[in-house]
Amino acid sequence: MYKILKAQELTTNIYLMDVEAPRVAKTCEPGQFVIVRTDGESERIPLTICDYDRERGTVTIVFQIVGAATQMMARLQEGDSFRDFVGPLGCPSDLTKEDAESLKRKRILFVAGGVGAAPVYPQVKWLHERGVDADVIVGSKTRSLLILEKEMEAVAGNLYITTDDGSYGRSGMVTQTIQDLVAEGKQYDVCIAIGPMIMMKFVCKLTKELGIPTVVSLNPIMVDGTGMCGACRVTVGGQVKFACVDGPEFDGHLVNFDEAMSRQQLYRTQEGRAFLKAKEGETHHGGCGNCG
Image (tube, rainbow, N blue to C red; front, side, top):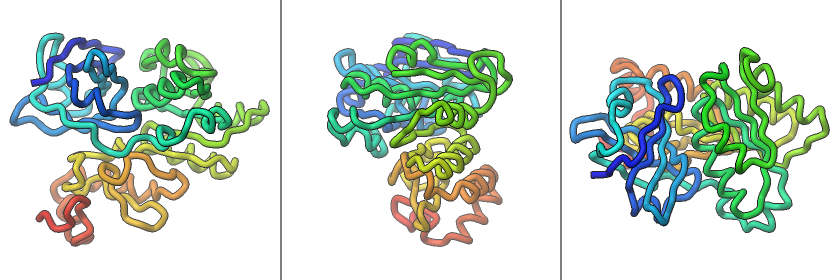
């Protein structure tokens, strides 16, 4: 069992939990994820790691209520436990593979949309701990749905908050803020965008026009988290990939977002899953290709 040391509602339907998981905390890196289950009968939920403390042996997760399983998670309190807390899974961010000196020479921009602020935070924090500054754009529909502002402010080189309705920070979509920063003279060597699929699609459309290489995290389309269900199948540069085993981070300019979002809709129904399985055959699944 994995004890919950902290349970906090950040804003409407978005929760943060610190979980006692020493083995995960010891080896995890920014960009990776865990799979959690509240009990032996509940659904498996893949969640990108928001933070970790190796000394305390804790891992921080942030999740939004989107169905029955996450609703059950939201009812858990400090002192309760998860039945399963498996990880770290997935590949760490490519940034973690570079040395600090080369990173210091890079002009890095992070773009976080909604709950995407949670997986962006550990990457920015990791860079900050190594003396690397990065600009961060955090977008939200409205001020009341904004999360992790203070935490992000403490580690970002420059933090730009934008709300769709103009209730806080800059007004408009994150893409508008990217355009504004470039117009003001900002130049970037790489952009890391994490958030809803539609947001990442339009960020990539813009950054391709601006000539800024862009990395995206496809965690939002993961279901099983092990490559066995076929939910997170995506085409990247003309090749079939699976977000959970090959990612979750990919070159955003090579991702076929329209196909991925269409599959995401189909996968939500039993009929849609059957259609995809029949259409894709042995390539429907990631981990084994023939798990039936």
